[in-house]
Image 1 (spheres, rainbow, N blue to C red):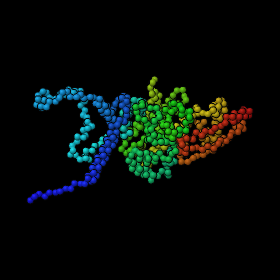
Image 2: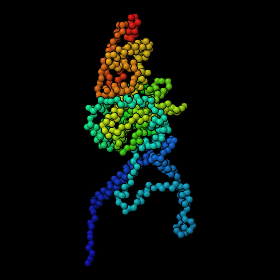
Image 3: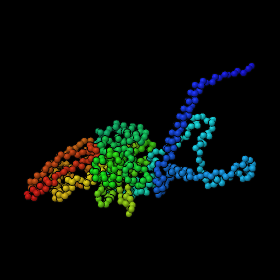
Image 4: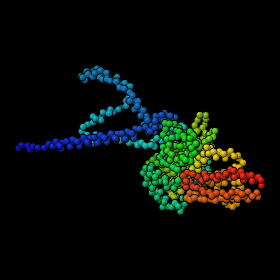
Length: 539
């Protein structure tokens, strides 16, 4: 029986051409995908996060992942400089004779690195038995690199080398007791009638649902901070500030920071070199300046110690900015040891809110740098119960208001040094009129005490400012504007008329863009005061 023969008809020329083009297109797509994947993987896993000079500058190099990657990078660079000489002499064809004479000549391998390197063309020698998909599939790196990896243990060592400390072991802020009293002042927006159990449960659900750090900043932090009109910005890179440590380190990029409007600083103050390099963080006019409140948050799987280092780093920049404004126009810098800058960290996995204060101390010796210290104020578990949440949110919001008070106070004090000619003329009119104004204001204060009338403007001249009292006023005015009308009347026998004081509106921090109430000071014409003084003498 003759075998059965199968006849196969070959495809038509047109069909063959379509199959060939389809195969070429598939190969092109596979190769293009491979190229893109290689670039992204290598850039993610092997790109150094800090320059080599950063590691050379460390006084003590810790054993961290970043340090090991930097060591691998340097070893690769060193091995690439080695050259391998060509083999000496031809290889004999007769293996027996070749072995009897001592084997191959390997003198060209002396002192060569033992590290194995794969030649780029070796991937073309893969077995042809593998499928096309297996041939073009490459293993991805298991190392996850992110921006926060720049803030490892080696960064902590770098901060200590430059006098930036994450604790107050070397120096404690002198105003911490007053600060804690100010932060404990109650707020109307967090009272049981304003913040209910249902709202707290909503906060708990949103905290449980976050996945990324951006979710925390968008869904969780706004509930803690409440409604506010304080000038702020998120994720702005501080490109224009003079480096606090060295130029080999990453620049600050806070998750959130509060500051003042650029227009609050007069033009002459902005032109000062120190102010420009230490107070104005970017070139964008809409980005707040003189930042002294910072927030650093992490995702549920984020590193809490990294957030603490970031808060310490940003807070040191804020403390330097406040110190620069505080000493603006003075012949020499003074250090009062008080904290005027605050930072906060939040971790959703544990619901932990932490609050820190930052202050500056004088250099320890000639040629040394000023030192910056971070003090932990307190810690709150925000997701446990509503009572702890209220305490944490109260301290958080009061800290923002307190930072704004200090910020506006230093800006307000720096601006008059470059006041207009009218302001300079007022200073040249002599102290007599100013002393008279103080005396009349003091009398009005004494008289109004018995009538239980609250005199806000006059109290700033009579009584030194108290942080806890100011915080109470700011907290009480959180949700509404308070208007006070105070009239000064003379009870003395001289019959001197004292003009009634104009209506004064106390503006809460949330009712203007970072401008506190004391900015709208009562202005009295000097000529009128002199006239009143003359009439008083005649009487």
